[in-house]
Image (cartoon, rainbow, N blue to C red; front, side):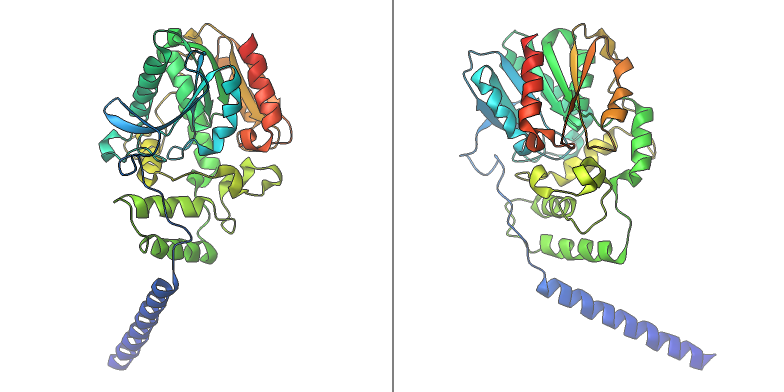
Length: 343
């Protein structure tokens, strides 16, 4: 008995020693693939605006005298960089891009402020500020489209027209369905995945940190762009081949990504309870719902299930494109939006 115990202790001790050596070597050889930029809190040269008690990274194109168009990016936790192709609309409109609270190059904020409700309140602040008493046009993509839909149900008179490009889901039931189909947007925990997670973690701890959130932001940003992980979001892309160049961000908001999503769920984090479709039919004007031809997760078939939620809606399918249609097929995407805005 004592001999078996001793052998077991030796084996366990050796295994832990080898694991410690492995971790030490991994830490030594890991180095960040890139450095993260500063946010508006630390870089005064960035275009910014103070609204609703925080500082946002905010880009504006076109003349302020033109009708305002506010672009709401996806995520949560991403930023507006991947949607900048929409600045082509500045020939007729005043186009505003902003990074949502705690995301992109906007200021990092206390965790209690990172909720879907706060994101909607911030959108209202943007609409009020740039609308100057006039209804605005909104373009939302993915999670941003979900926010725009919820905003239409709350402030229908504040919006002249709205474009919703592939909202992930608008009802709690569809949220649960999507969460289940994608394993909560988590990859299977294979040896390869665990290796990449560990390596990225150590890389993130060796950054030249511009602020306290940088390591967390790097960790999330690096992993969502890794081709070698079997991410469920590969279904968003044509040929199910993840193309990180289409999703390029200035900087992810790691805490925002987790906490805003979690804020829409029940106390156990098992089911969605936030209803983005509440009062949506009170919006009296036509909404443009955009889907892509390649997206097998939340593309045409999925978006057709959203149609009954609207009072008046037009569905347009962008050919030869996946979820990131603004970057994949800007010609068709812009043409669809321009045609809708002219109506």
